[in-house]
Image 1 (cartoon, rainbow, N blue to C red):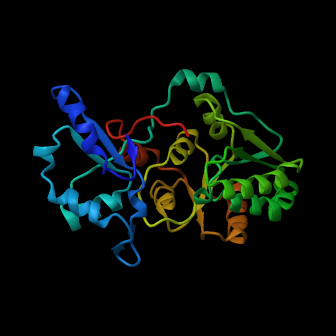
Image 2: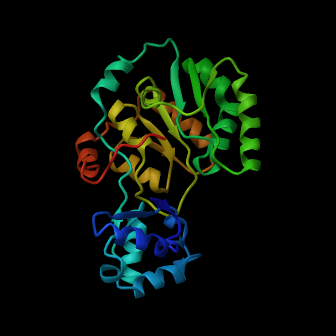
Image 3: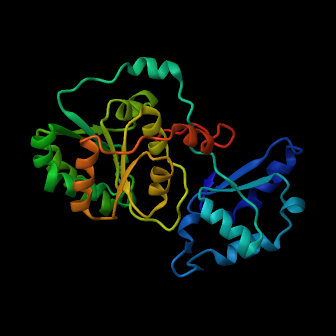
Amino acid sequence: MYSGDITYIDALAPVLYGLGGRATLSLNLFYAHFDYDVTAERFVRHEALYESIAAADLARDYPWLRLFVDSEKMQQILQTKFGIETALWPMVNLDVNPHVIDRIGPKLRHREKLVVFPGNGQLAKGFDLACDFISKYGLSLSHKYRCRFVLREMFRDSPANNAMMQSKLDIVAARSYVDKVSGTLSEEDFLKLFYHADVIVLPYRRQSFYSRTSSCVVNSILAGVPVLATGDCWMSDQVTRFHAGLTFPDGDIDAMYKTLCRLLEGQGPATDLEEAQAFYTSGRILPAVT
C-alpha cells in the first residue's frame, strides 16, 4: 500500500487481526522524502507522526505491519533520529519479460535520432522544462543531428499545472520533429520508448534525497541507452553511480543542450551494468511500469 500517512492503520487492525496472522500490511511511506529538509536538517512536516511511531511497540501492537520508505536517505534519518527501522520499497527490476522484448523487436533504424522524455506530465519530473527546452533548441538539434523528440501526454499534477503543461505541449507538438505519446501505456509500449531511443532525458526537479529507485533509469540501462538527467539529485546519483549517462544543473536548459550534444556525439560513459545489477537485486526490487 502506498501512503504518505499511516494515521489510519488502527482502522485496519481488526481486519488483519481477524485473519489470525495470515496477512501482512506492507506500507510504503511514499512521500516521506518530502518530509525532511536536508539543507536545514529538520523535518518540515509529520515529525509528530514519526515520534508516535517511535514511541509505539510495533512488534507487539502491530505485528502484521511492515514499514517501507522509497529513499535510502530517509531510511537513514528515521533510524538515526527515531530508531525506526524500515525497508526500501520494491519499485523496479532488472528482469524484463523476454517475451515482451521479443515483441518489441530490434531497435528501429530511424533516419533521425530519437530523444525521448519518458516521464509523465508532472512539474516534479520537469515536463515544463522539457517543453521549454524543445521550444528553444529543438529546431537547432533537429537540423544538427536529425533529431526527433518524443514526449508523454499523460498529466498527473494539479489542474492548474496540468493546464499549463498541456498548453506548452500543444505548442511544441505542432512542430514536425516532435511526437507525443498519449494515454496509459502497456508494458510493451512503455519499454519501446527506451529500446527505440538514442537518448533518454530525465529532467526531474532537484529533490532532497539521493537514492530512490527509478524504472526509467533501469529501463535505460537495460536498453543500453544513455541517460541525460538533472544533477545533484536522487536521479543523478544512479546515473553517475552506474555510469549510465551525463547530468546537467537543475533548470539550466542551456547546459542541458550542451550535454545532450555530447551524448548524441557518443561522448557518454560506458554503463556499468554489472554494478547496476548488484544494486537492483531481484529480492529487493519488483517490476513497475509508469
